[in-house]
Length: 203
Image (cartoon, rainbow, N blue to C red; front, top):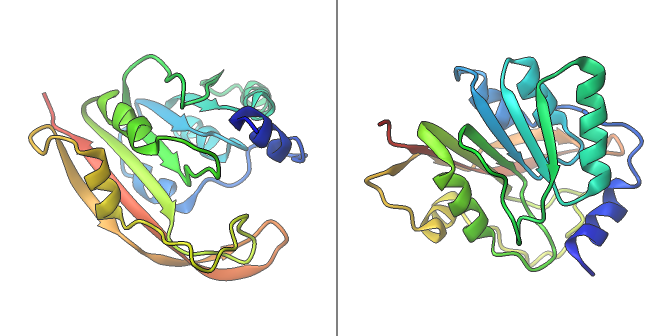
């Protein structure tokens, strides 16, 4: 199964677009001066639309045409500055440079050189720009992966995989906070997020 087919099946079941933004993105970006932002794997568009409402010029990309069109329509309805594009990030990466690149729960059950994608994302940052990677650090009752033996890489392990020069990129946050989360069916659970924030050196 291709990535497009898998995620089309996933997002084809959605009936609404532009839900809640991920809380760690809100926590982080809320203190930043708006500029150009890239949302990797925009999905339902909650993050992209929230950023645009805060004054960011947003590029939102996803492998699913349904997801891309849903976010495009929601942004158009609100008159928000969101540019959307379909990308299989295993094959292509959006052009441009950014003050913020957000990769929220950028996971897939399909083969993907994720470190290469995130390394490319870091290199797309403008001087002083921030790469925010928020990963699952635990399995929630509604997770598609219920394998009890799943091991979640720590933020520092993810940073090591990126192998970025410390002279140009620095880790400004690497922790594993817990929070109360609500699943799509209304169920709640305490989950762990693995948070990595990397800043590119100012010019």
